[in-house]
Image 1: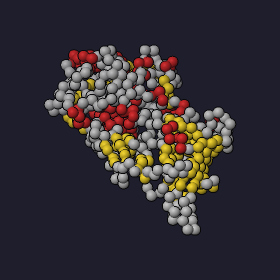
Image 2 (image 1 turned 45 degrees about the horizontal axis):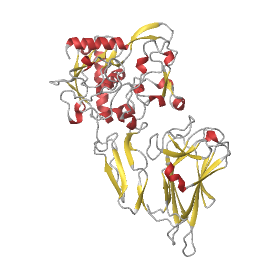
Image 3 (image 1 turned 90 degrees about the vertical axis):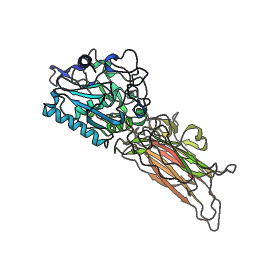
Image 4 (image 1 turned 135 degrees about the vertical axis):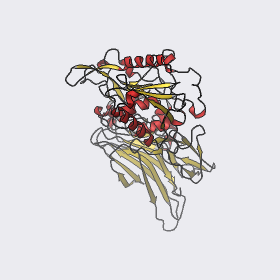
Length: 525
């Protein structure tokens, strides 16, 4: 980038990032806010519908990773962010940083942490003859960066007050191609924006991107990201909030946890691994008898957002579990895992009139006709119902279904807000014929979520007799429960059984109970 263009870019960025903030005592002071630069088209080097010079193959912008132009990209609402080819980021350090030991060390620490956390999938290297590179400067006030690789020099400024590894990594994430977390298209499900408290003229900093990205499917919203704003960012007074968790998430995340600048979050690392297709994030799937497993041909195997498709090898079997699983990063452990339960293939038996040999339901409406649902409540809409997404009451119930772990697939929910204390609702699976006359048994398997301080109980009965109860859990994760019921016969027999799964409401509304992926049938699988 020519020096005049670089200066124009820098001045544009400084103008946009300069903010008036309030101290705790209420006195105003001018402070530079760390952020991402949105520059004029002729400065930023955005190449319209074509490719940046030298981009081929893996160097192409990742499919679906488009962002809304919130600054001065007036000719398009979805400019493309380009990742660095093969994760290699050349850099030049200006004397204004090199001669400042604190800033220089913070910059080196930030780069080393990112390389270590990504197992060198990202590599910062001194510039040799690279055409595109990052130019770290510290001669201007403020902390800011362009977003994603540019043609020529990408400006990253580490000004006074920005010399910590955490703030540096915030800017490095922008340089790698990431925008602020709260600008995600799906952010309204997670945070509320209090526009009335925002400084005049700064509402554009809270715009969200207009396009849903693959990132939002593969990596969940991250309240603890280095790229998240603080709860009072750009507020008229420091005591006023501009961004806070929604009611549903307020019991899980305190507003003061937003905007940390200390460390890369687990999901920050996951985002990098997604955009740069870092290998071997999820384990190679185990071989499953009678199951065909196909990998997504468009995504390198076992990286973040890669998928597995499942099907049975023969028409004599039917699939129990999800048809597709996606590689995601667990937000708690940081470990890559496949969504949903591992499926298996059960032998398909032709049902004999009234009798059934096996039943499976992922709780989509199409399969609920296999069950009879009853309730003791007289409240309209009470009882087991098919539901998608988070429950209506914060502090209880799951966020997604178990089968596909997304917000559009369904599970079966007992909504406690529509029932009274001790009222119950039951699923009845009737007419199950046990085929083995010498050892007649039935396998009952399902996933459940029981979370909330007012939790009731979940009971499984066979032929009207209670076999076990499930106790409340400490979180809303899905858990699997299996039970084998065997009938002792004097000689041989073909008994028929009825299975009932009964949910009983607790003393208060925080007692939603959910189940998913119910299988009742032969245990040989």
